[in-house]
Amino acid sequence: MQNAVCGGRVPPVIEGFDRESLGDRAYRVIKDMIITRQLEPDAAVPESVLAKTLGISRSPIKAALTRLQQDGLIVGEAWKVPHVAPLDAKYVDNVYQVRRSLEALCARQSIDLLPDEAIDAFGKQLDSAGKQLKAGSLGEIQQAHYSFNELIASYCNNELLQTLVAGLQDHLARIRHAGPEDDAPWLTKQYGFLSDKLDAMKKRDGDALVAAVTARSARDMGLRPGARVRAMFKASAAHLIPVDANDSRMAGAAARLDSPGARGYKEGTRNQ
Image (cartoon, rainbow, N blue to C red; front, side):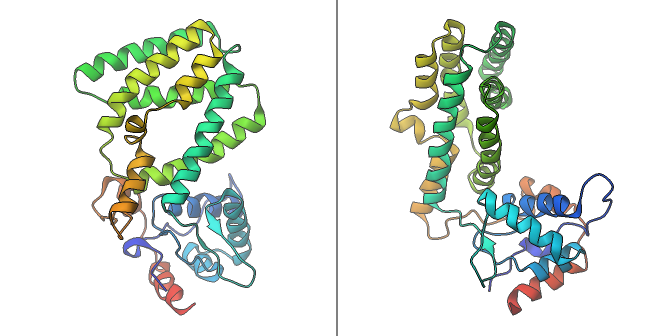
């Protein structure tokens, strides 16, 4: 069975439980390991080995894995060791289909509820991002993209919809970690998309806002991070970018304690 931990690095032994339960902390740590690919797609996650790695009992591990299964990040079957959900073309397509549907609902339900000042603030943010884009900087465009999604979700007046949107963010983060880091083509296109969305919000035109959220040409959709991940799957049997210990995405993991449980996790998964 494959080694589940990248480079033998694992989160530190859990400590400092005064602010949250063991189950909650185990849930956060294991979820982070899945998103950042310290636990690879399809990797086995035996309760006993995770418990040893994190230095806690199996009960909070079991509770955490149950929650992660409900989130769609862990796959569990009766009498079988649970494993990390696959990360393949079908998974990516499913995530982006759900995202587009949820964003359309948020757009439709928020259009009449967005405060004028919130729209004006987003307009100023986008204007600043446009100036930075001309100067060759893409950071503000990316932040404006996130701000728009947060804006329509915040004012959709539907708590269940907001919960679904929030839950999808872990899957989107997982895809971003797996995909190429060069988002320049997609972010450059985003300025035009965001301008269309801003115009629709100013006009209080729900149909136009939904169209701006959902309508993309085949070429434009091909620039999205998820589409580029799908292209990787089709282009290579090694469908995931190899994790580089020097990769900036792994900086946080590299800084974590290389606990004595690391070797135990590595050997334990082999013996399951």
